[in-house]
Image (cartoon, rainbow, N blue to C red):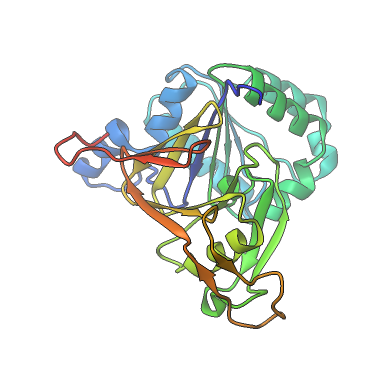
Amino acid sequence: MQQIKGTLIPIGGNEDKGDDDNEMYTEEFIDEGILFHVVKEAGGIDAKIVVIPTASSIPVEVGENYLDAFQKLGCTDVTVLDIRSKEDSEKEISIELIKTAKCIMFSGGDQSKITDRIGGTKIHDILVDRYQNEEGFVIAGTSAGAMVMANEMIAGGSATEAFIKGAVTMYKGLSLIPELIIDTHFIRRGRFGRQSEAVAKHPDLIGIGLAEDTGMIIKNGNNCTVIGSGMVIVFDGSSLTHNNEKVLKEGTPMTMANLRVHVLSNGDQFDIKNRTVSVLPIEAPFI
C-alpha cells in the first residue's frame, strides 16, 4: 500500500468563519477554529490557498466569504477558482493554480457538481498526485467538499426514511480516500440512518459522520485527529453478524447486528487501517 504524504481535512459544514461580532468568538476563531487548523497544516499565513466554490449555487458569494475568513486569519495569498464546467477544469489558469497551491479548499453545496465538473479532468489528476506524493499539501473541504473526498460518495438521501433500503443515493467521488464514506451536517440533520445504509452497502468501508463546525485532520491517509466544536461519529461494519441489505427489496426496513459505532470529539484520534480509537484524556487541553 502506497504511503500517502499529503493531508486531508474534511469538515462537517457551517464552520466558524469569524463573522461573529463578539470579541470572544473572534479570538476563538483565530486561535482554535477549523480554518485556523487548515492554514496551520498548509504551512501558515503565507501559504498559497485556492478556494473552489464549484459545489455552491452562489459561488461568487461563497468565494468572497472564504476570502474574508482567511484574511481575518492573516492569510496573504488566497485565490478563488470558480469552476463551472469540465472545460474550466482543463484551462491552463486552473491547472497552474492547482499545481502551485499549498492548500485547496472545496466549499459546500452539491457534491455531484464537483465530480461532474472536476472528476476525471487534468486538475483531478494533479490533486490526486500531489495529495499522494507531496508532504505538506492540504486538501480541505466542507460539507459537499468533504463528502466528495470518498470514492463511494453519498449523493443524497432522506433522514426521515432512515434505515429503509433505498433511502441513500450513492455516486462516485474524487477517490482521495477510498477507505471512507463521509457524511456531513450529521447531528443537526439526523443522518445516522443514511450513513448506516451506506455502510451496509459497503461494509468493508468506514463511515464518518461529521457534525457542523467539526472536522478531521487525516495524515498519511490513515491517522485522523478530530478538530472543532462538535462530534465525529465513526461507523465500523467489519464485525457485522447480520446484514440483509443485499437481499431486501427497496423500501424495506433493514437489519444490522453488531455495527460498531464510536463517538469522538476534539483531540480524539482514529486509526483507519487498524480501526482503533485513541481518546484524549478528560484533563487534556482543548486543541
